[in-house]
Image 1 (tube, rainbow, N blue to C red):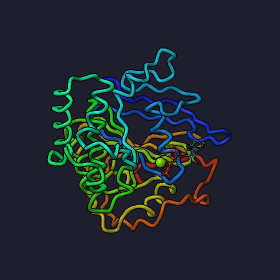
Image 2 (cartoon, helix red, strand yellow):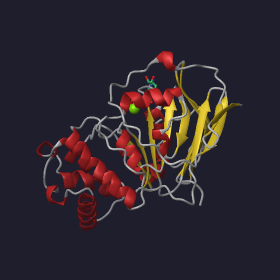
Image 3 (cartoon, helix red, strand yellow):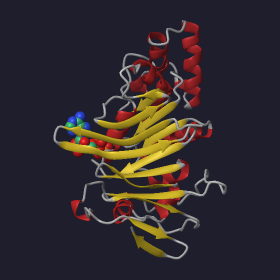
Image 4 (cartoon, helix red, strand yellow):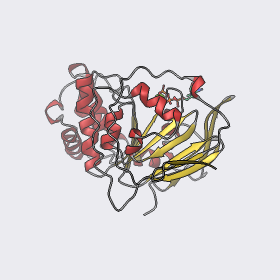
Length: 316
Ligand SMILES: Nc1ncnc2c1ncn2[C@@H]1O[C@H](COP(=O)(O)OP(=O)(O)OP(=O)(O)O)[C@@H](O)[C@H]1O
Ligand SMILES: [Mg+2]
């Protein structure tokens, strides 16, 4: 089956600033991809381009069968196929949870009222809020409001969901309830791309992790790569983001018949590394902040291939 998202050599500039520099990756239908990286590395821009909230300057993007650079692109259809949820929930304060969820099915899908109601009841129960249908946003916690925002997207029956740091504004206990909803969607086979700073969660739920650095896909691979980063940049990033208290959860989706690939992409090119090792159980370190550290980047370095079996590193 062809991937649900194909991103190929995508470049994006804002004025003089080059924000995405030849970004390529794919998302298989039914899989969960986590995008991680420092603040300003281009994660949200990549996500926004996938939903055509931003246009790309060059490269190719194919999302749910839509060619994003085609003059014939139907953006409304794309937005039906691809849901996006942001950190801020943006619920209408004067509408109940149910009415917030019913809005798009009414205005866009033009469903009759009974069907709108049934749909709202279904998606609100999917996010564990069946009993809050008649509550207004001001009567809900942050986590509950975020779950209504997720339900609102689900009501459009998207083929792909994008989540941009949807838990960063929440207290830890509220974060857990939102992440549980995402886990449930993953179990149901929803294709998802999530930008997250929750490394323990990325380990637990993601089939594939993409580490972005300075507008590039710097390193990517199965979630196990978070336990054995190959580049200094990822190592440094993880040192700054992984919570000491976070358990190193076993990645549930790795299968023996699909040996994971681990890719490094540096300024000078790319290389692939097939991993046949077991994940290490290094203790994780405490999250210390997300600021960019320009001194960690070494432009122009040669790409490397690390063969774990012989423990040799080859310069290409
Ligand atoms: N609309 C815009 N106009 C101009 N510059 C922008 C715009 N959106 C993003 N940028 C710039 O592009 C770069 C990447 O931004 P982006 O929001 O993609 O980063 P990010 O990785 O999501 O960061 P964070 O973790 O802080 O959310 C930043 O330098 C940002 O200032
Ligand atoms: Mg962002």
